[in-house]
Length: 390
Ligand code: PMP
Ligand code: GLN
Image 1 (spheres, rainbow, N blue to C red):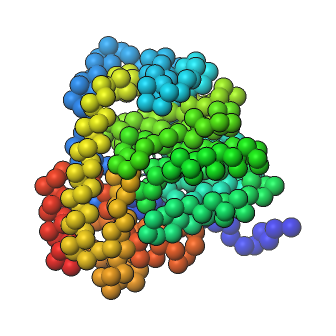
Image 2: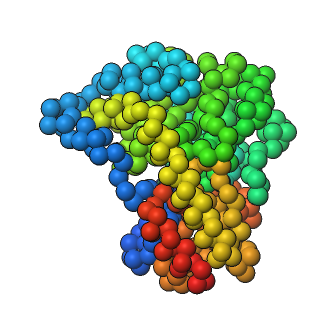
């Protein structure tokens, strides 16, 4: 029997300790101090003007100003299916195998709530994107972290095999990986696919950086043998089109999985905002030159910032994908990433994010700090100049 005399905390147990996200904390710190914000991952320039105009046109034409259909507007579902075919050779039925969500964040939440029962185990590689821990907790499930170790952050696939138990329900994968920039190789994907079949696991793949790969290529796990019916693939327009505030994401998967996720989504947001869906449909149909230009622009920025960080004395782990660079601050004599990041704006006018908060293991990543390079060249150059003064 519970002891009624003890005050019960307001926040449910699963969310205890999750507090304010590190991204919100660090962006608030940047706003307060006027420092250059290389913390939270958002571009400082908006995406293509014609896509912004498409959003204005949709609003004016009254497209989506009233509740759009639950699975998303057909124009966007068709465009998502076309995009999956054009870039990855995958075929999805836009009516039954595509679901539009409020960003990848809602897709992840709805997927966890739909597929997990209390006590189910979810294996994910740490450091993990912050919403994973929260969503697994909200579903009452248990996260099982497997550490990616510097400098290469390659997954230990033997450890992965050993981590699977009879309670393991799903693997939650993110490639290209935020924050480390690791991109899973074809061989790693093949091993993961074999394991998923052998142990009858579902796999959720967070692919929001699918178009930000500098080394190798992005291969959706769902394209591998045996994966079409057990993978929920998640992506979003935020990163690819530099409109992170629009919060348009999507799920592509076999119909029974999409139906399950849609069931949860219906009671989270019912439907996602309408007019921007029409604009994202146009964005997904931009010519190849847009996607190549976007990636090459980011490659140059990656190289600029990583040279600056190296010159400033950081150990730099060059990312193969994403627009983040993970560094180690130990060579600067630092012992704790959180302390370092909280003091950095005062010390030199730059904001970064401590990777240590993305680990369950308390000592892993203790001196790792992430810098975002989705910023203007002059901003990155100025940040590098300031960091050199450390
Ligand atoms: N997953 C990862 C790995 C991310 O970095 C982000 C941030 N864009 C998201 C999910 C959330 O994406 P969205 O903004 O579309 O909700
Ligand atoms: N995905 C972004 C990042 O990793 C932030 C998104 C957020 O603030 N939740 O920085």
